[in-house]
Length: 223
Ligand SMILES: [Zn+2]
Image (cartoon, helix red, strand yellow):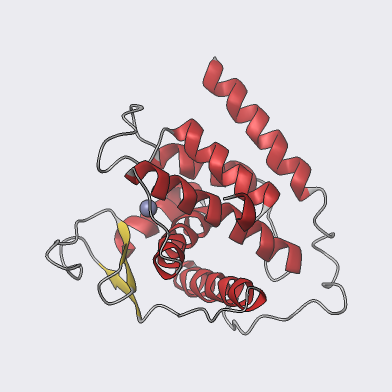
């Protein structure tokens, strides 16, 4: 019961914020920057490329506003199950996406991401990819964390901020049901227990949704 209520409240928060987004059927307001990204997001591969391009564009502008230069990732690697790249001395694993600070790259199991896209819709791509770029940003900002879960929740917050920032500039529009898709994705990716001290902890579904919503509603500075 509690989770259902929380979900409904979060959804209400996200929806309220979306209400302030300019009507998506209208052209973006004058002075709104146009993105350099050419993909139309019409299929999975195109959506993945678009999510990467738009996310880096979003961060490049945030860094520029702060008088810094954003450093794009060096590689964006799609792998399939077992054949992903190593990160330092760590082997990549199936059904995962990760940012690797050694070499400053992002890799993802495309088969896994594709199955989430098929099951839950394109929102899956716009949670997973901005989340990993959130880790790339943490690395550039040299943000330090006491617990891994803090790192993960901030990446969720950055992902929410990225998405709302992109919606606001009009470079992506929401489809009916997108908010629910996004929250379903985060719920699926949450930890089953609240062992926040664990080395691989990402946070419970409720905490992840909550941090995503915080970023979505308040922007990167709230992360
Ligand atoms: Zn993460």
